[in-house]
Length: 216
Length: 196
Length: 207
Image (cartoon, rainbow over all chains, first blue to last red; front, side, top):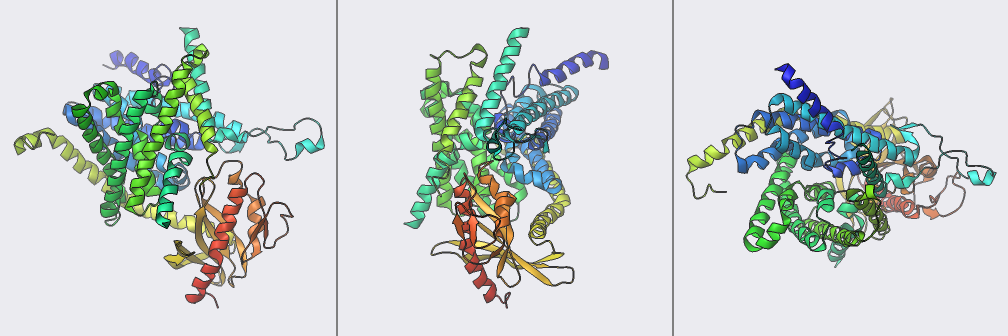
């Protein structure tokens, strides 16, 4: 059992990371991808919350897949997802209040994150518990990693910091008055704004396209 | 007169300043999906406008009549999403019956309105902004729909022209759309601060 | 939905799973809510307490003096306000803090404003909520601008484009590139200061 399952399991896990990466390949869940990636910390929180909901909903859907009636399916999915999102939201409010304030309405918006409903429909409602869990972990991981990557790029360009820690020395104010070369990194605030989110993601998608074409 | 000014300002602010797509990143999925052709984009926009007005009003009522008085804040998300799913079902049945051609061209996107973040997002923002009268709630949700329609139509217009442009191979499709959206959002930033 | 035309049995048959799971999820949520809601409430209190401590460092304990009361700010402008008393470890009054909000550049701005016990001087403000442009308007959270309010006289303040930001008086120097956000903060101060003073005198909080 384990032997015949493990190659497929590994494949499912890896698919979520690159080939079927929810953001980069499937273009799902764009809304949080753009909205909360201004810094790594919120991106990580968002990624983990989404992964938690994805895992729970995949487990529940997979367990009840034989009982589902076709026309009530979507309703069932949304009910399950909404419940777990409420739990995640409460958890953040109770244990990470600062993060909860920062992410605000984007946590409840996990409910309508297409990744979760798409995985429930495409994987959990057709596969057993084991594969569904692996799939959720792979997809969740892929999502979290992509979010953090975007967050890191945007945070470093906007403030010269990663995870709140300064890694690039920010240029001193009025450096041009002293003459000579710029003595540090010039923060580009635009990357913390919506425009930065759109352009960074667009360029990353372009890069992914390029890599895929090279390797194909 | 004063309330009217507030309403007009609120409406304008949600349409252009706090545009859901450009400043709150809501509704990006259909924005990328159907903004290829301007007539489809317009239809989609209208469907969203209708659903968002309906569900914004309904969720506001439920929130203020049921959830807040009874201290049932915890059920907010579950209730909201069920109301939205119901409203979408209603629209879907209506469009299928009376506009079969439109229904065909929408395809999967009509059902996907349920998972359109713009709608749930708007309902949540109504709660977050502490909107406390129903007229304002209706106007704001309607404005959100109009704002979405506008964003998606502008995008569709640009994309129709983009087909004639010489876009680098790797950037074709979603990437160039996102970059365009970024430039558009920068343009819309200019409106911020216009309304106080 | 076909249950209208079909017998009730069919309805139950089709939807029992939905009903059962709605019930189970409801129980689950109720349980988790019961377990965590005290923590959420404590967090909310802590947030206010932290804001007050940040503004009035001597604070050991804070009390709600006026809770969420409507206040008339202008002709048709009313707001809800909460006023907190800050007490030091000997239970001596070290200041008051009150909530205030107004329109900013992109979104509303919520502030916590602190004043000394006699309402003669401001002790500064803390931004509770804002959505100002990063790098420009968001500088209202930074010392350059905030420090100008610490010790400023508790009366109408005026905004100046240039001047000495280090000098503490009723002239506040704007953040360059973010005049609207700077104005927004000062407007909130000016809008609230007299009215809050009146309200507090009325309630017997000021002697």
